[in-house]
Image (cartoon, rainbow, N blue to C red; front, side, top):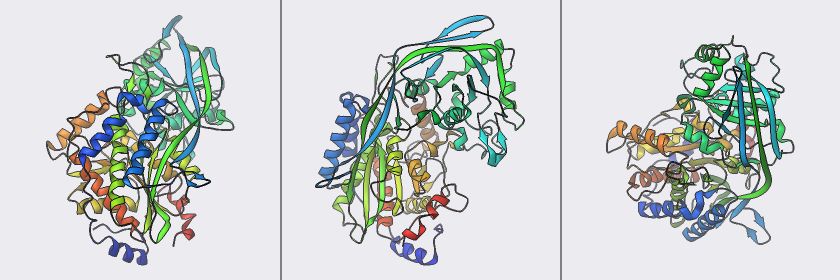
Length: 552
């Protein structure tokens, strides 16, 4: 058994409470299947926030939470609690065609939205964009990290300019260096790069797409960035968003470098060193024009609770995002509905059935909370809103256990998480998994930065111990080879594409077994006095330590 990094007294209590697995929750794969089928049906229109698909999704989840025996745990009302938490958001959408022209080598060429380039609707509140003949600068990985003595900008003035930036970290190609080796840091995420664009005063950053370092293909980029985008409502959006946030295909990038007399691969290697300096693409300019519609909307997190018997103010939170991409660009078949069956109707379906198991079992000493959050696909916005506007104190939130995508290919011999963390909660998961006959496998793709891509990250940033569970890839039928092949096929052919649809031939027995582990983990936490902790060296430890006195 792995030792938990707790005080001696806490260890004694935890050991007693965690002595044996909880009773089998008997989670029915057939019920999981029915929820996925409904939530991912065309009738739900891809579950886009602030669309008719949201109305149907919230109504369905609320109905099921109520049916399995939960109590409403959302916003306060005159008579108690609502089933939802209002999440005010700003919605931005490009209206009409996008004109994008590149001049290079004395010639002009037009690029198509979603083909050569994918431009996000600006989140700055403007109603139109009209930029002409803007100079272009290559800024390497676009990282400014003083604690690592790293600066890709070195005093360059990016005002009035567009910058091309590599995706992922400077360590990605070599697997070693100042950014954690192969494992992505937050500096590698495209979200960080766009934030840095605003700080640098640029007109925008355009991320260069390469499938390996991005961890997904161009179809995912296109589909994720050419529909409506959302943000939390900000007093000054320009402080965190530049007017242009976009992706560009690698082939187009290489050609632009060539026409500017530059070698893309050579400059890419330079960008992996501290000595890199920004390079202007001489003779290259970009122009774009399009209209933008901006409006305020109210989306919703759905919240159900089972109050604790002894410590109702302490809670274990299970979460899964209910949203997907809605209706967008058509695929090769002409399908425009992004059903999101695996991502993440499966996670919500599993959470509903786990809630059923908790509701029919004896009440736990601590409160157990189930939350279907909105706008994960728009930047973890529903969970971020909850974590910064919590319905219940985060200081006495024991842990967040998130699920983003369930096992649809049968049982696995192992379990995993999205990005490994220095966290005793992960140690607990490993131990409970072992009790269920499963071994732990570290994140198979640390370079994908998965820790920063699921809703648990919103809680982690506020110091709450949090993880996002993944089933393993060592399948009972077919082993690691079969599991890896299935994962790669999903990412390539279905992730953020209309093809992520319900399949009646899925084997959901593995998902049922996974949920039994998460049920066991949550039950043991909710019946103990354990407070999971971030281990020394974790970037989230300081935030949690500030509220230590509130946990007894």
